[in-house]
Length: 446
Image (cartoon, rainbow, N blue to C red; front, side):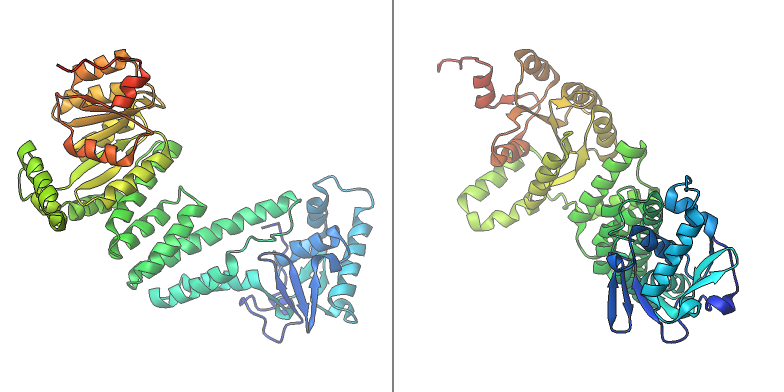
């Protein structure tokens, strides 16, 4: 807030967050500035110009406290006020009084105090003041009551502060402070919703908090727990992966222990029981059953456990789309997505997937380098590479490592999914379209 002079609470209201008598003015600063005086509605352009309007806004942001004339002049003119600044400011106040409180003189809401001006809290109903009062009450209330208070506050507070006041730097600073208060209220609402068993509301508020600030770890925690308690385990895993990617990219750190514990629970719960060993014979059995009796396709997961797949690709949209496609398949499951060589190796060590599907070209190096490190630790891991322009040298290197396949990244989704199901170490398959792009003639039939 701008610097203020504290003055008598008896003069300017009790500070309770609501006027003690019928207000002379009802003012909204959340969104566009609007003022109601009885049945008359005033807009920003009814206040005598931009500067008088800004004087009013500065005083409203310090409702119940005085702001010195010097401070107001500094804010209005950016610290370089003209020689006639003081009489000019006094003329602005006179204009405001004529428009806001005609006939009231100095007894209306805009008061003159020693060295400055103030808005009498008891004569003004301000939406920002109501927002602050509700959030303060919520901080001392039980979860159910706090959730109701915070929900009401967020209905008021979600619009941008002084939404149509674009120019002054002080307005931007105040707007940023209010945005932070709203973000905190969203997280608190999500946490209260979790406490009273309202998982859907926790998801909504957690999502709003993380959309506004992707580094809000409390928001991620509430979102992921809400999804988990709402039975949306796959969505919760995808939310964890988005959180992990953002934390890694922006802060160079990993999610909190609480989030990692949630991920472990989700992975354990979504993993299907392994009824039969995952061998090539079992896979062939599933394929044969599917071909002979289509109505029994839903039994595939009961015959062979779901393949756990790690995606490695630095294109987030592609990774998210592929993860969604995997999770819609009864026998496949996405464990998350890495974006770089280093994060691929780290996530592989943490998650131990069955299959890794990896872009050949990553932001910090070649997917082949990541594959080599993974296969050196776990030679039986199935690795499938995606690319648009492989070289013969890359293919030879991949075959030497034991990579299972090379597929076009722009190819059909069904081809990719089938390749993941049937990938086999030591038997690298190269899609015909990639062979054609390299100009390699197919071997003649025997």
